[in-house]
Image (cartoon, rainbow, N blue to C red; front, side, top):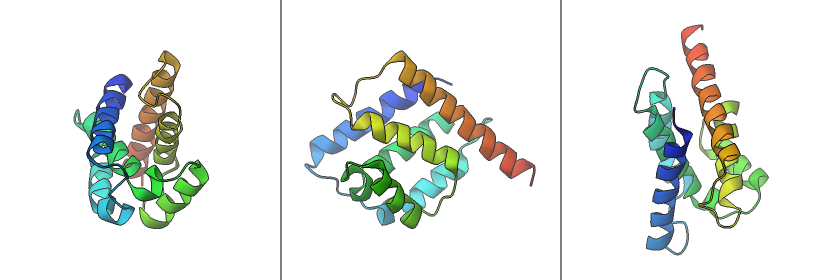
Length: 135
């Protein structure tokens, strides 16, 4: 797993969206179905999971409810109310992305951030795999 790849792809898409529209143009209602589909595809056995995670970050961070607020608590409340996914490991990854996107410059990363993002992503995959296969 290369967390740098996940982050670079997500940031590139977020930057493209911010260039194309001055303000976030999507809502969580707009992306709910696609984010749910991408979330269901996340699996340690699927090499496309990195791209799915990157797209989840893009879709969520580019919404009015997340991209248009400055506090994670506000973003998280909107996510929990409108996204329909109850996975603490997913919210940990989303919070990391949110926090980093609210630092200047938002596209910069550190080796520590990539390590922590990779650990959070692997934790998400592991918890999801165990939940789905041990139930």
